[in-house]
Amino acid sequence: MRRYALVAIGGGIGSLIRYGITQFMAPMGLWTPLSLLVINTTGCFLISFLNFVSDPSGDIYLGPRSRLFLLVGVCGGYTTFSSFSLLSFNAARNGDYLDLWLNIGLSHILCLLSVWLGAIVAAPFPHALRRVTHLLRSWNP
Amino acid sequence: MLAIVLVLVGGAIGSMWRFSWSGFVAQRLGETFPFGTLVVNLVGSALIGVFSGVVGHVSNSATAAMLQQFLVVGICGGLTTFSSFSLQTYNLIAEGRWLSALANIIFSTGFCFVCLAIGWQFTQWLNG
Image (cartoon, rainbow over all chains, first blue to last red; front, side):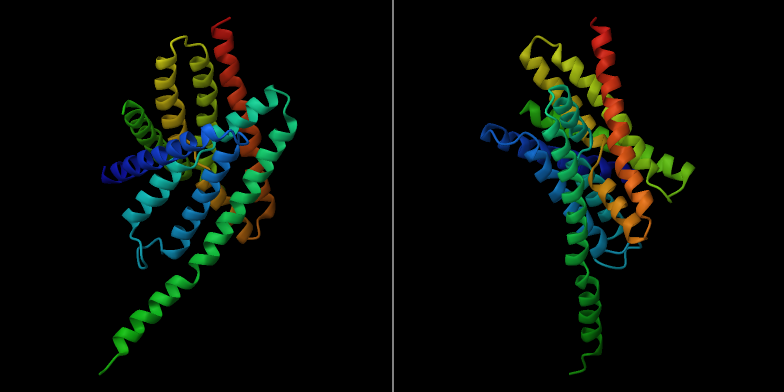
């Protein structure tokens, strides 16, 4: 049951941050899908970085509980597919086909790019940590 | 404020459902394709269609806002995920499974759209 608590708390926090960002950007009168694009791309970068900087077995940086809280909980609650679908649906209903395909295209492309970026940024960390721990172990003053 | 509590609780509930159902589906259908994420995104999209239709018919704006915060932002937002979806698509690509990656994108986007439309149309029919 601890696992569900971690997911619940993380998911609640992620959802709240998402709500905060949409509320913050709403009065700016920007392109409607923009706030969700910002949220989903940053969320994809975050889940990717955290995923690839850590090892699922808990060896490096993040243990399985931390991964559950951060990846499934926070990132999962922070990003959303339902609002993305709703934006597409509303655009289609209003005949905004440019908005429709722009939102779909940009969301998928930018989110995949963000995942890729997160992986790249995360890559040197585990190796760096191993090197540091190795150096520390072999240090014989 | 009330909005904060509604989003927190709704998001918590939706996220727990996501964890539970996607895990269940992944156990049944295997991890070769992200069926678990697909299922929660489909259900969440259907629900947001229903909830949006319901909220649109609520005359009291304060009530509508609370329903929106709890049901749409909270539950649907917590239940569905774009991050897991993109990460799984990326992993498919990294494994060289381009067709599966493309299928994930197209089926997720397309079927979620259809589910949402059905959900929304259902509320229209209810209020007909």
